Image (tube, rainbow over all chains, first blue to last red; front, side):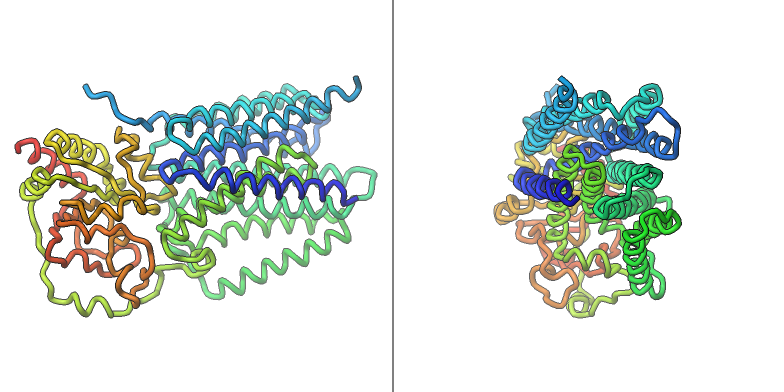
Length: 97
Length: 467
């Protein structure tokens, strides 16, 4: 019964370490884009939402799943687009007129 | 052949996870950050398409309609949001992510209780955990959004017996969880747990004051990741677990950085309601009584700046509130025209979220190599002719270094008092967020320029132009 849970925990802990290692080196200048970008990644809940909402037969589960799909998509699309909008503004030297 | 589709879905998840990691890594340098974000977005697309191929997903029309609605709302939000409102935007998106994760868990619960099989304990536990984290993230983020947007007061809201009440709720949650593990099909108890989770989110953000929002936003960011991970445990889906863990780690790192920048522990931020009812001891104030300020006008200020060799600009949130960043950039341009070396010193908590000030200045076309972090700029102040402080107070208060009795003692500051001269643009003599007197203002080499940030900087620009 617990085998799946333990396998999941292994993945979780290792992924956390990778996260710490990768993100520790990000300079303060980029903290806001990092936050909105990682925020978009947390919209991965959309995968769960799709799986829950995918049933052909209507049920409360499907309705909740569909609401989750909408919310998670806002999270994903809004997060990635706004991050891109911010990063566009980071320039080395502006072109002097 | 039977296994082909499921394994290819799993492999797609692996690719997507790898893209997330590479994307996050590339977000670490301004030169590659945009590409990194794009890679992460591609990873997300791969994960979504792979999931749509899953046998469990049959309800295509509705799912696609849902995604279309979500995409439209998300795109409009991303287009319209002002850069000063970025903390609210991120807060709101955090909340949506948390809500989605919680809904997935509730949906999964509904599915299993109507199934014929007995419900394994680990499934109940993961569902409870997912509802708890997702619920807290959802309402906590919404409240943070409402506070940041100014819909309600940003100051800490406290009520009597707040802590005992919270502890009782938490105890109730634990008791309910224990009951549900034994009787997994009790929907009333389950709904009560959902309710408590939502309430806990509100109670968690309620007592946290405006200036602590960088910490709260970072922490909620971490929670939104953990919520996704928890939902991953419910569905036994590695994609969710990995991505959630990455975001969780990122949020925790940022939370730590913010706490360190304010010299406070995370428990202190969450439970102390800083700045409410805490009276500052008169130790510094006594020495300051009766000392004179040196006030100058824009023309004198422009003279000092224009004939300096090096100027360091220290922007605070006051500058952002006044929307003075474009004027500041213009001032820097004019000074550079005169051959002055201009740098910007950014304190980690200068904005309303980590790195916020950098984004605001980038929006005003300030080239990012001119932006210096606290640790890089502090050694430079000795060699700086003029430090120009615009709308910042506590982060430049030397008491943090010298006065052990001060509430901000030990907080890392920008050491502008080491510069040859300091010009402070300030609206009036009100104290900063910490409510502490700032002895910097009374130093002999400090000149005060009273007025709104935007007006004063604009005046400086026109005076410098005439030099």
